[in-house]
Image (tube, rainbow, N blue to C red; front, side, top):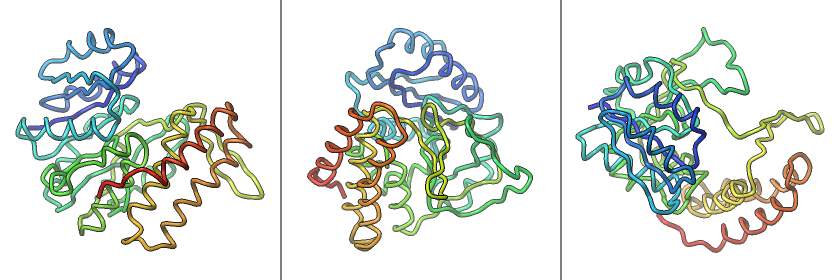
Length: 279
């Protein structure tokens, strides 16, 4: 049983159609988790046209991590051993599932692939290699469901952002592996109006996320460092926290909606230090 799942929250309808058309013929069943989208009627109409699919409508936005756990549970109930997780903006390229299936006996806990960002090119496509990696994003991730269950799933307290970092970190520290296969399987896009900048000789990417997203980026950066301080050590934990503190220079120096992002940054710091940790 080949299963994929897509997390939905106010998706762009045309991109959603592209996403669905790209994956529906590669799997036996497609799971949609709708996190209380404002354009619910359009989303439901499109998803209902997909044969062999499940549509779960959450009555409020429960976050990406919670929705990913819903996908994994449903996939297990369908008898699947692996599940492909996708966000609403990522589009599968042909053959991604069949390529992943070649490596399901490798012993890996998660499989990932090379991705082409709509904003940036991949260099040296002819030189792609198979390798073990420490991190992969959840979109385009092929997840071993028995190991997902052993780790008690994704940390739903994260809501959005750092979900993939936390899950991958727990995989590695528990002795599991993540395998990156030599295949470009996902057309992906990070942020909106993504730009490259240089300052004092160093180049960096500015994603121009919304203030809503900035809040969770900052909050979860602090939370993640606190959560794993015992295993990563105080020095590395501090590095994550410092990243959250210094992010304000990017917001105020290079992004729009500066006042709103300043407020989001302050709230994110406060909540990141005060929120209860789920181990």
